[in-house]
Amino acid sequence: MAGRLYGTLVAAGLPTPTMRMQTFIGGGAQCADYLHAVADLVGSMLPSIEQHGVASAAEIDPATLAARMQQETISGGCLIIGRSVVGAWARAPERTGSR
Image (cartoon, rainbow, N blue to C red; front, side, top):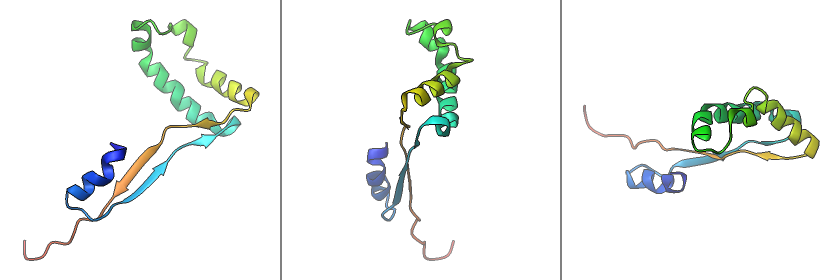
């Protein structure tokens, strides 16, 4: 939807929207919270991951996944670039007349 957000708001009769895009970029200890969120997401998808034969719970080891990912980013000097989040907002035109 991000690529269509501007056109959708304008087509709805709203004024030109203000738009922003945000993402996480960091490495080392700075990315701990982000990697914990990724590990939590993997944990919530674990039943589907196992059902489709991608990996087993033992291979993923959800209890240590975030710490292992962080250690790998530190030892490899890696930069983590997270997914982008796009937001848009516009103020509806003032209505004239009584309600």
